[in-house]
Length: 128
Image 1 (cartoon, rainbow, N blue to C red):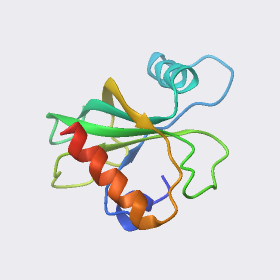
Image 2 (cartoon, one colour):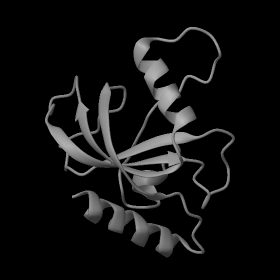
Image 3 (cartoon, helix red, strand yellow):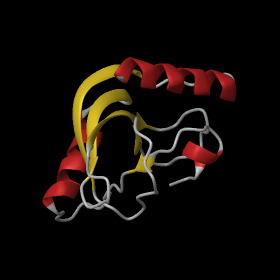
Image 4 (cartoon, rainbow, N blue to C red):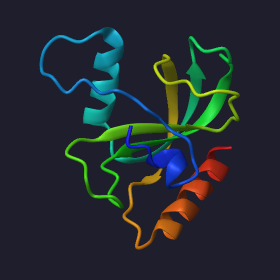
């Protein structure tokens, strides 16, 4: 990822890898790409699981799908999940399962970092 979730914003996120090639994909990669290509940008409510981690519980998550307009440095959409659970350790390189259950709000550009942080906090509260 971009290292912004925890470092700049205070919300640790898991960035999903998106296969942007036009060729054949694994079933999981195809599902992610289809979702990104066919759904509106914005914030979604989800259930999430780190399938192969030491803590494989299922937890609520706020998921951002889009361009991250506050930072304005992306050429492609991203999918970033904020799992609303305190994990004992990070889960880089692990398999993350997401079940998107609802659309929360459209993607917005904020005038300040404080505005963005307040909106992310509100998204988490809403999903909880």
